[in-house]
Length: 247
Image (tube, rainbow, N blue to C red; front, side, top):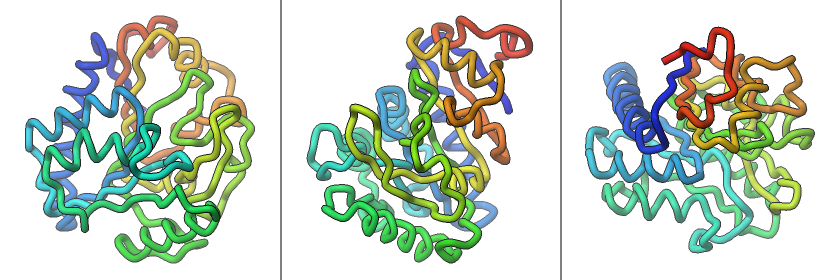
């Protein structure tokens, strides 16, 4: 794993935009297209606005997925898709055929999750229940409880070993649909965006504490092929040891 300490959330967005653009060019040179799973949250929103403004990604050769979604409609203020559409898709005029939305407003969330697996298969290949496809890049955040995507501490989705997308409960926050670790850990690259002092305890525990991924799901990201943590000074304030000097 690699960690870079940056001044604030705006700096995280700036550096992340460069990393996304570099990864996209590399993927498009190697395989003709770039597959990206998008995260929700304020810091990713800043990243998406920067990506839309800078226009350094060839979106005509990209396939965009969502890493997780709340069980709401696409126009709901809590929808990750709505945030992505307003901050990236519309400003960058990305063709709708390149965007793959989770239909989390459906009554049957399990069926919606299975249909999203089928969509991943249609676009990227693989067989649901078998080896997942390799996304080029998965963008993630991390909560103050150590969750990532909608993979919450002690939640059923943490035990999933075959399915790539499942419904999962967010304690006190409602139901979600989320990509699972079998799919996330197959990605060619993962970038985790973490900002704010409220995340500092969890970040120190995830990176430096005893291994307990049931309580701190983000610890499992250490198993991914290539992981970059972009964290601001506030979030990194409790780090010690080898991570203290990482830049």
